[in-house]
Length: 332
Image 1 (tube, rainbow, N blue to C red):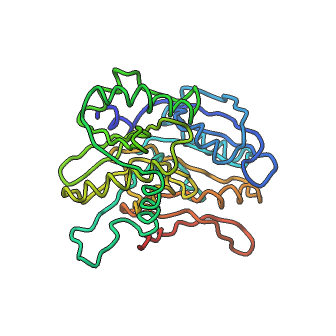
Image 2: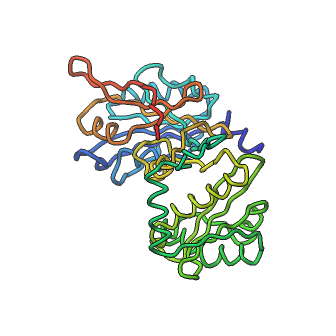
Image 3: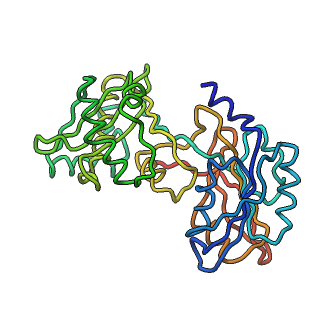
């Protein structure tokens, strides 16, 4: 927890990096500079570049140097200035023309307190109907266990190989000891297809709240609909046991992000994370059609008074700009 809270003000040094390469959308080349500690450099660069060449300009920048560095880079002829600053450093960012958003947001579902006999669907209708179709087609059955041997098998045969296959050799996976330590207090939801263990999901209950944890599968791609079915069956079971709040975990704050879109299908709302997040920013110093297309195709989400807002592209007399609008909540 101390490490998380330290993110409010630290680390107390930053680097500046020049980025260049072909744009992710719209064609053409882009140039940018990044200022931050490097943790979210790859993510910020990936919003705009198909692939990127990076050149370190300066290192060991202290808070008093950040504002002048950002100001200088904004007038250096680059298309963009990207930054990643601890929450307490955010006032150093330019006051106008800057898209600000947290590094991560949390998605949660508030289940109904009470249901009448007329309430057929606990989750959005499309999700539940598709889940029931998949259960019939693949003969899916779920069970829950706290057995340590089952946890070890899940790590060795499902979670570790699935994550490495899906995200590549560079993905971070705990060693078995670390995984087992982090999994204390969790139960394992196992999905079986025709009697064979097909996928698993860690879940942890605390009072009337349930957190969905790590997912793993026997193959990559995972068995058809296994993630959706596991999530739905776990939520149904938890609701019958008195749970009324589901934490689906943290995601990147972009409406085009596949993980965020998946969780939104279940009716999950965007909320602040439990611990403070770095403030990420995009400052457009030279507008072009390429920059505009990148922003339009990846609507970024910010939180104001714990409500989700989205940065949208607009224009006044042909000049592009970005504005923050309240994100409408999905209705069932």
